[in-house]
Image (cartoon, rainbow, N blue to C red; front, top):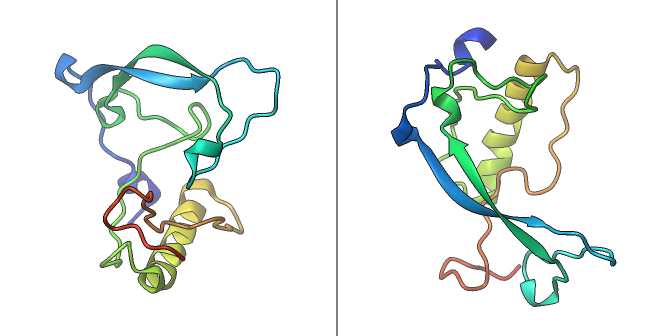
Length: 131
């Protein structure tokens, strides 16, 4: 499938495809911000709430582009059966994402950092597993 055919088909968003939400952005601080994904009690962040209008990017007249917005929407079918299975993700998803990013960007080399598509749960989730 070509890169152009992978880009999502676009149209004008309707009012039903727009929502307003409150998004918390890190506010001005006189100290170095610290975020702890698994223990928010250790965070020292100060947030400022902002009302933001959010549109369905799949419904935009002109699709978002890597050059302009820093993101794009592309169709992708994965062979992964369970994103909670680290071996399934490593075996299937990581090579798929490397290939997709190479195709979309023209990059010669793609390195996937961090969890690379693994689903993680907080300690409050019944699916949380300690490492």
